[in-house]
Image (cartoon, rainbow, N blue to C red; front, side, top):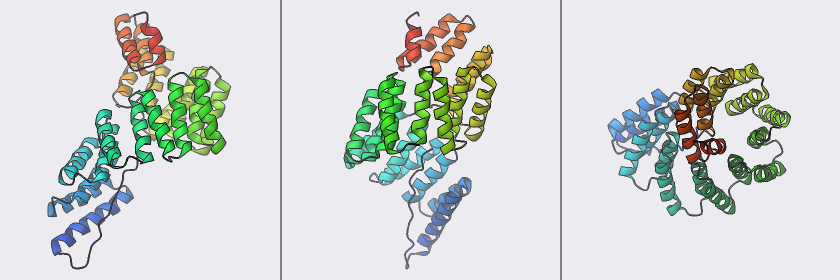
Length: 335
């Protein structure tokens, strides 16, 4: 999850006793938040709001504590209330965009980003973030435009080129993906996210040796990174080393239980084992995460077809086709 913005309030000499009490709760809430004690932080921010129900900074930071503890809708409610009281509170608006993104309400996230961009049209980060949300919506061409603009405005090229390369990978344009990833390596030879994406490019091309080499280089830079472990697990699955793949995927889930991609790949493990009911249950678990997960409908359809459920399989592939999944597009032709 992104780190959401936190802001503090200065306690001025001469404040009333009510203001002092309010601010003391606020400071205690921030301290709890820094320690990762989210329930305690929520309690302190709530006490601050009992003293002053218009204390928008406490609403914002309680929203941060809510989303960090997995309660994204409570966070959205806090950010929205803060914005009712202070419509110009841009920090809460950006935080609400993050929360909308987290629960898969991408159109709402884009509305908040658009509002902020109108106030700060030269913000490279806002254009970059818009590109991230558009990518999750599979609006790849619009996302590429947003990323290009962010670079023109001074956004870090390394991070942006990784995302552009990833989009070209999703589009199946591996030469373009390599071009942008190579630009990253020219700037930062061991950039782990670029190595991770490059491993998936190699995997798509059937070059298992290079795919494994790239993802292991990424894990050398960031050991036990759950998304990298999951992708190494996928490489092992495609190489036919199913148990080694499952071990990596399980470790990824242990480190990050909210990783929908790992549930997709665990479903693929059971698909390859011929345990179709278990595969389908895991694909459903992946879809329930509201996370952008490529090729999920393709694999789901394959499990259904293996059970003889051709109509249901076609429904999955059509959904995948509509979301731009390359292999779903091919399979949907026969439906």
